[in-house]
Image (cartoon, one colour):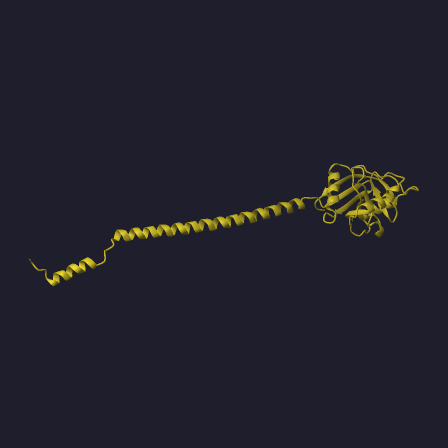
Length: 232
C-alpha cells in the first residue's frame, strides 16, 4: 500500500479548511439589494414629509382665505349714509363696531327705500329732531318704557349723534333721532349707531323751524332718500 507523503497531506488539509470564495456577481447583487432598500426608505420619507408639509400649507391657506373673505365681506359694508333732506344733505358715519345689529337693520331698510319721504315730525330746539312714524311728542315718553325693557349699552350721547329708540323694531317702528345738544339722560333710551360728520348746519336749520305746541314743524321737512357709501 502506497504511503502518502506528509507534505501532500498538509496541502490537502489546507485546501479543505480554507474559506469559500464569494463571487463578484454575488457581491454586486447584495449591493444592488441594499441600494434599492435604501432608495425605497428615502423615497418613503420624502413622500410623507412632503405630504405633511402640503397639508399644513393647505390648512394655513384655508384659514387665511376664510379670514380674508370675512375681512373682505366686512369691508364691503357701507360705512356712511347720506340723508338727503329737503333742507340739504347730512352725512352720517355709521358705528358698525358699537351697534352692528342696528347698523345692519338700518342698511337693510335704506336698501328697501324705507326712509324715502319720511318726515321730521318732532323738532325740539337744543334737544333732538326725530323722523319716523311715531307721531307726536308722546314718542319721547315711550323711550322710558322701551329703555327699561332692553339693557343695551350705547355710547355717550353728544350733539349730532344718530340713534333710534330701543326695543324690537318693525318697519314702522324704526325711527331716527339726531341730537342737537349733549343729552346724557338719553343714554338709556336710545341706541346710538352713527354720528353726523358733515351737514351740522342742515341739522341746525331743521332745528330752527317753527313748530306748534306739540313740537311738530309747521312746514313739511322730510328725508328725500338715503344714499349708502363705503367712503366719503
